[in-house]
Amino acid sequence: MEEPLIQTEEEILDEIKTQEPAKAILFNDEVHTFDEVIEQIMKATGCDLPTAEALTWEVHTKGKAVVYTGELVKCLQVTSVLEEIELMTQVEV
Image (cartoon, rainbow, N blue to C red; front, side):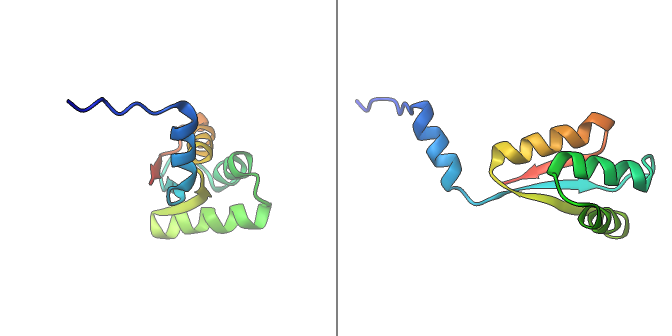
């Protein structure tokens, strides 16, 4: 009889760190102003104003944009901040 696979927290964290980078995706809506979205992207990602403006324009023109790429935990933090003002997001792994 096989023993059930039990992973320690450290093993799980190591596994997450070695996975492909996750992506935080922001979707366009017709509710928020450009300024609101720009401000929230800067707050969520720590990027500068020109980067936030470019990302906001991409969201507006293409319907969505990857606003952050990195560890899953950080992507979840980014989307959480974006969702503070009810922006629509998704994390892709």
